[in-house]
Image (cartoon, rainbow, N blue to C red; front, side, top):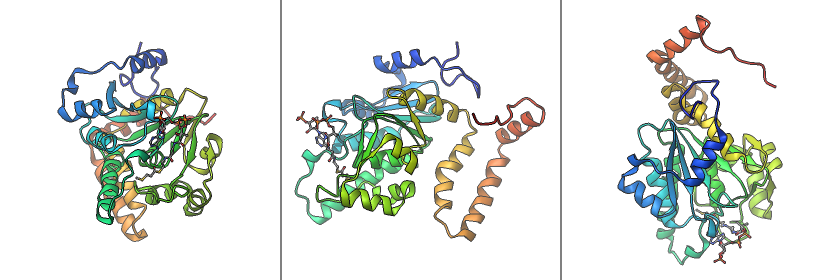
Length: 296
Ligand code: 1HE
């Protein structure tokens, strides 16, 4: 039997094994890292599945609401992923992925403190988006407020049918502060985000996939399995390709076209000069690598 991360493209994943391991939270000994230990104590655990780091929000009694301690734990976890991690999955324990900002901590902050609080979210969510590895979010239940901001910092979102998306900040008299105004419009556009915040509109899982929140929609309870399958595949890519997609592409997309084209040329040249790229192209030319298959 192949274990996740042990093979290349046509790997067989034992979903029962994955589910058992995730449920039993097998901890990997290398995690004697003080910041990872502190993160686990504060509700963010890290478990390795082959080359995939599974990061789990574990505050189900509060619907994984993001307290300052949880935000710090997300930051520390993504900034300190083990060397063998080549991709990551982020998941939430319980019925909901994440209920957003912990409203019980929403205290009177003066303007300066508010800026620093928001900036601390930016650092944590930048660690997700611009960390060492691509991140796949496994979504279910509520993906709301700061939970949607966190999901938006991931590179791929897999939603199960129980997923719903909202930005209740608008109706709570506040504004997004975790990067939502930058990242959410990139997924669904400014007009839809404005509508969500002005009217409290909630998107269900099917609508969410249609408008661009999630790239994958799966039956209830299967988001984690699908996310692990995708992350395992991503982990087998050439590292420089993954780097180009997570670090260069989003920046190129924001550059003026002539700057973007130059950055693209530089990135392409660096990626294709890596020995691994040459080996992969040679394998295809020698008939040893899979062809692109027609979609179902
Ligand atoms: C919370 C939070 C929270 C739940 N902060 N404690 N986010 C929101 O406005 C969403 C608020 N939450 C909800 O609408 C609902 O809780 C859910 C739809 C997510 C889930 O409903 P349900 O029926 O499963 O759970 P519940 O009974 O509402 O909540 C269970 C407990 O979690 C309860 O506490 P308990 O002590 O009474 O058991 C809730 O109070 C608690 N809880 N959500 C604190 N968010 C950087 S800026 C980002 C700005 C935002 O994210 S604003 C959006 C905040």
